[in-house]
Amino acid sequence: MKIEVRDVPPRAAWALEQAGVHPLLARLFAARGVASADELDAGLARLLPPAGLKGAHAAAVLLADAIAAGQRICFVADYDCDGATACAVGIRGLRLLGARQVDYLVPDRLVDGYGLTAPIAERVAARGADLLVTVDNGIASIDGVARARELGLKVLVTDHHLPATEPPPGRPKAASAPPGGSAPCEAGSVGAVILPAADVIVNPNQPGCGFDSKSMAGVGVMFYVLLALRAELRERGSFDAASQPKLDTLLPLVALGTVADVVRLDANNRRLVAQGLKRIRAGQMSTGLAALFAVAGRSSQKASTFDFGFALGPRINAAGRLADMTLGIELLLTDDAARADELARTLDGINRERREIEGGMREQAMQIAAGLFDVEDEPPSAIAVFDPDFHEGVVGIIAARLKDRLHRPSFVFAASSAPGREHELKGSGRSIPGFHLRDALDLVAKRHPGVLLRFGGHAMAAGCTIAEAHFELFEQALQQVAAEWLDAATLTRRLETDGPLPPEYRRPDMVDTLHHEVWGQGFAPPVFSEEVEVLSQRLVGDRHLALKLRHHGQPVDGIWFGRTEPLQPRTLLAFRLEVDEWQGARRVRLLVEGAAPA
Image 1 (spheres, rainbow, N blue to C red):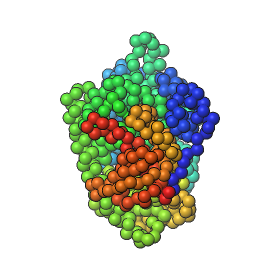
Image 2 (image 1 turned 135 degrees about the vertical axis):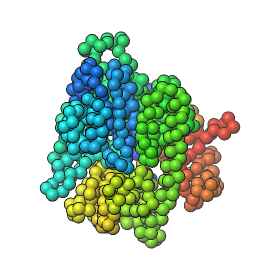
Image 3 (image 1 turned 60 degrees about the vertical axis):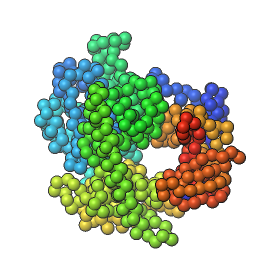
Image 4 (image 1 turned 90 degrees about the vertical axis):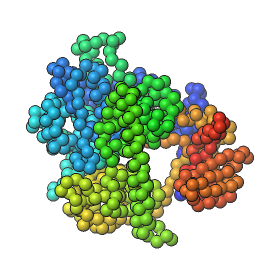
């Protein structure tokens, strides 16, 4: 591992300090590209206006007409946390704005696959819907949208992934949205863009959209559609500015979905998240969110982006992985405290089951991967593993664990559970910086026609389906591409840090200040690094390294989760900060992320 320190533009840091930003925060913000205090203004007035989002006004007109005509509106959601929160925001928002007949349908990950398919469109039509609205999917659903239109449905697509592309002749089209939905796709070496024939499309990543925040999650796109709809209804005289419904009550859900989907936290996304956190900390959140905080054992008064990404989001995602995302959506929609508690406990139980499945799969996947190379050798340039007992809903998590452990692009496959596809394998992959996973799959498809039955994704995450008989060929082909594209520098794990932590900031109130800020993808949480003295070390739970350290001459506790190998007496550590509370005392503890020779 190579530990590196981010550059801090001195002028930006100085300007932030002069504007009253705490010196440590000024340094951290400047290193993340913030040049002025205006960029840190999280006020609602600083949000980008909906008028800049292509299709938002047309969507508002379509929805306002549907509400006025008393039409039935049905959402088709994705089965991850972004899709669930987007669906809940859409339904709650439309009800606030006067809609009376609003329903939803969420595909089953294992049976239906991803997005609006033709069978899903038929199920929506069978419910008697007039208007179909996709959230967090649909931009690549060419056939599904076409079928919905054939059935007489109007279709509004709200999404944030890249559109599908026209493939070269003789090769199947690859949808750009990865299975399960994730961060917006990045452009790769693909053909001409093709769009579904929807009545309206709202997507910051569609051609011709000049909206400045290309990284909005699906829930953010839906929230912006509601802002445009409220403005349209105001113009129609449904209410005035003083009496209009308060859509800011939806911001806690917007914040949760945005962080959980690991989209880049640009300035606009940070404002959405900050506004959501502000309301949650003040107790202004839905009954379901409050129940989630309770079962997760987290304090909503101290809510942080960490809670979204590692406590609430996984519990909602677990429903889509192992059960039915309807459970998650119902939790986010209910206003009944008893029902919310019941659903939250159910989701917590499913998440515990997910962790158990993940634990067994992770150990098995690590053993398989370890068998691919000798201990004294470097791992192959890319990793692909399969076991008949792997659970299809957890392969993406295991791929991420493999990638983190070995620092190699990694794919994990499970047998498909879809009817009639028993001999197919469904795989999910995660990549490392410098290796565009979707483009790698594209090259494999070109070199070996027919091996990839379906694939899609973006730079850091992708999914594909192959025949079980083609697993070894896929593994060899992926390793060949990786060997061609990756060099020694790229294959070296790098940990970017914020450099030394001044000892005067190693105190609980400063840690609280850091945790209060909005951190996430593209705006990384603070990780410090410097040489420390290791006073003592011992294993706890046979899996974690508990440390006694000397930092700037003062003793401090540390913990390295998942580390069993001892450290040298003096070592360069990369670490985060947390407050350890015990018997009423609050002490700062270092959470070690990595180490390198001093």
